[in-house]
Amino acid sequence: MNAHGGGDETGGDGAAGITVGPLEFADAHSCAALERLLFAGESPWPAAAFAEELRAPHTRFFAARRSCPQRRRPWLVGYAGIALLGGAEPEAEVHTIGVDPKVQGRGIGRRLMALLLAEADAHGGPVFLDVRTDNEPAIALYRSEGFENIGMRPRYYQPSGADAYVMRRRAAEDTDGKEAAR
Image (tube, rainbow, N blue to C red; front, side, top):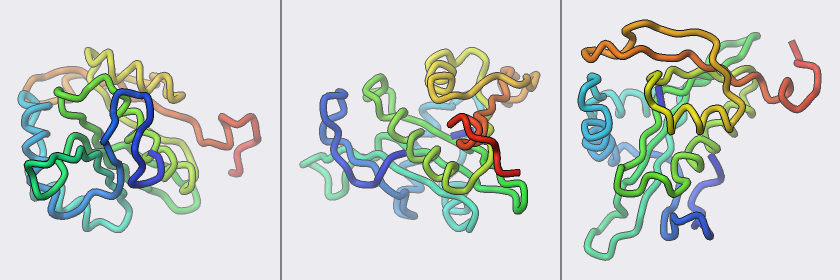
């Protein structure tokens, strides 16, 4: 399903006070709560799924947080994760990305996606993801980052039965105009 250096503050993108960095085990319950809000009709991931993903050696997960004086910990406003796969033929798969509706449209998803793509580029190979065919904001983001539709998965999301596009971004060396090292 769901990149940039960690811990930086944004400038004029409407997300002042938002920091991005590694997702922590302590964030699993907040991620699950946000997942239930964002993907209510689609079998949202529980906290245990986030914890399991964080334990996996081949995954990288990031969080976007907003400082909140009323809370001890900053408020989790977004999360994103990617799997780095393959050996001789590396590839990556975006597992999840989500941003709290209260702060959507402020560039937070783009910042999280930049972190994922930086990880993928360091790993090498193409990047794949699935996205609901009716999620126009996400599709626009992915296209702006070089993803293209390469297929469709009918009734992929359950229990809603929504279709998903399969999207791919070519390996960074392919998109930089260089010959792929394969």
